[in-house]
Length: 552
Image (cartoon, rainbow, N blue to C red):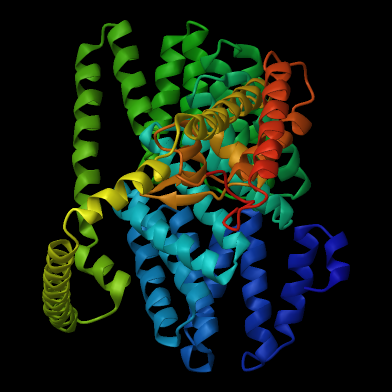
């Protein structure tokens, strides 16, 4: 794709690529790269069928493909299957792509493969396996310094948190992913992440913030001509609006969704569209029309595999049937929902667990077990030698001390008594050190309180934005472990990094320009702490053991 194509809309670029592709021989190296570019363009505009056909045609000539090209084609095909909710087909594309990545030792693509499979297990409700895969993916992306890959993992972690109901952590993950995508100029991915962030705010009870972010997303997607995703955004806006009694606004959003869907020139239906339309008619006290709309959604939900809102749909249908006193229909819909849950559990088990073990290690189980046995034996033998060494050493030292005490007699006691008194530290030297430690904890609490008051965000975002404290993934969660230790006197390190605390305070004071109840207190205590540290440095200037970076 040349730079001059950037001024054209996707439809024009697709037309140019298609013409050029027709003029090339299928054995030409440029033919494969151009075909991949064209399939991504189709996918971006929502024409998944055309994108899928191109990729399948490329795979039909495997002998002409390099390993990297095979991996890319299989991954793109898996992504399309995933978007079409054909999860088993998606797995069957992702798994050989990951296997091939291992065979050539490409860590970047291995990380992408872990991320791809995590999406499959997440879709089947196996959140634990999905979390393990994401952790492995994130570690490799960090090692390879792949920022876009890190953002993708953070986005998927946000989705995991959201489905677990841990909305605050989901918001942090989505925001971090959005920041990286924006910095990398990945506009479509940034817009998709922003919509996920909006959905999380809505689930967390902040509908106004959700609508604001979704309107921003819609503007971005319209500029990108990404009409397939834009349709989903309009439907989501309509759903949030009707659930907040904004009935006329909801109907307007739904009309825009229908108009945008028509631009795709596809026969694909949106079951969620009819579900939201049913909610609108139900709110307008038109139960018969509402039931008809729900039934249209019910007819389409299996065809298009829109399983995510099944619970809402079947619940709405059952409750509305009860309202019109059609108890037989109500009972039927509750039964359908129960059967659906059971079938989804069966689908979750359809992907054999041995596949995922192979994906994690790609090593035969026998060699793995032999290695474990050998390591256990070696560790035990080494531990035995260490214990024997220390036993002999302590016995010799005890014998030496006994001999010295026997020779020295009472003189030893007379000589050690004065020196023991001299070495006993006074209470006055301990008190300032404890006071400084207490001050550090108070400063961190004041900084966080001012940050939360001014930015409406939390501890993790303070660590991330200040770039003073490292943020990592621990047990499937984003954590700022080092920073967290500074909020309690008992968890504070023995040699705390006081300069990091001071920098955090200064960062908050500079970033939070609004009036705050905590500003004056934070400034006063920060100045007092710095003055105390200066005095301590002067007093200890003679000491050779002074470490300027830590307060003892």
